[in-house]
Image: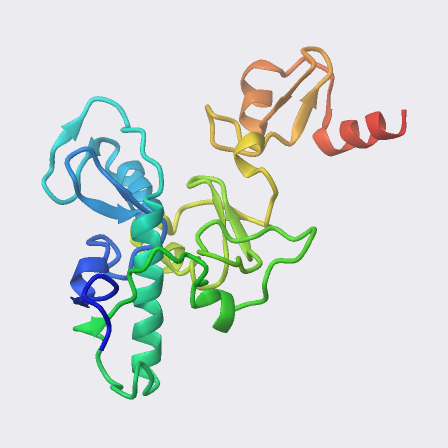
Amino acid sequence: PQSPSLGRALSEDQFSCSICLEVFVEPVTTPCGHSFCKACLLGYWTHSKKFTCPMCKKSYSRRPEMSVNRVLAEISSQFQGLMLAGGSGGAGGSGGSSRGSTLNLSSDTSHSSPSSTDNGEFARAGEVPCDACIGRKVKALKSCLNCPGSFCEVHLRHHKKVKSLTSHRLIEPTFHLEEKICKKHERLLEIYCRSDHTCICTACAEASHRSHDLVSAEHEWKKKMVS
């Protein structure tokens, strides 16, 4: 039998986001101690226009700085694997529900997310990887300007199911996404202002660069590459 230090009986509720009611994807924890999918929480705050915890309603004057809990993400990924295996008669032949399944809690983090084996191709050199995959990453299908992040088919499901995320702007997979987003308007920095020598978004161009010499950022980049 498996050692108690490596496994324990766990329920689905312990790894479910209370916003989307699915297993955590990129879980983050609020200062008050409650965990949610990163995209779900950011979507909730965007929709409500104030920074409160969806669980206990504790309010914050500014958006808390949070990073993805990699340990919880890895455990959630393993648990989702047990759910998928249980649904197809796997997980030691138990089949059916995954509640009470034994989860490997060893320090080995080489296991990959179920999505990286069953739900898409692995990202190769030159392809944008999914930010939410644990271990070997699957090729991203879309990048989200609001989260921001890039997601494979499985980890993109929140944007289709959670109401507060359906309005998020999805674009083709993009490398180094955060560096290419206007922090003020949450839009791509796809315009180059030759007057101010800086990259701007379409909203910036309309608001304060109307009379300036503007070209597409891609055009300017190609010009500098050949010069």
